[in-house]
Image (cartoon, rainbow, N blue to C red; front, side, top):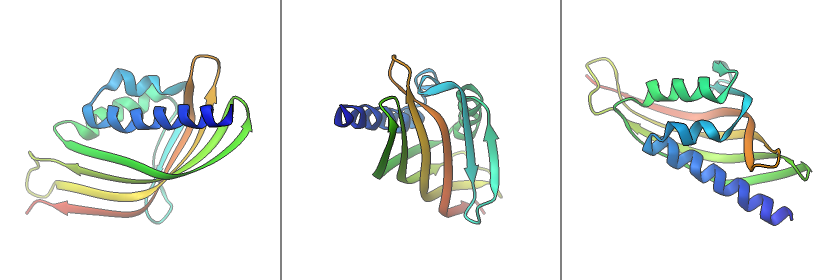
Length: 145
């Protein structure tokens, strides 16, 4: 059963990346448990933003990616199952975001690397993220001059 669960989580995480890049906000939000906790940290380990639900996170992502083209990729996952319905996963990640309409002094692109630290839970209707921390290790920002 564990292999099937790993594949279910992998498929859900692949949707996470695709839904962000294709701006499928309804699908993206559905990947999160109702009261999911989400936090994003900078390269120094300082908290940048926190959210108390997938809906809050999705709304912020919509604003952040408005008008942008993006690619999000994950790999090298590390699984730890606490029970048949709960797993912790760490993923290496890379994202690249291009803002074609950026004005002078605004970012025209962002290229980042880091790790997602997540807890996934299955309450009978598929795997969902109950907590997510994005911890950046590298973040390159190109400012339009």
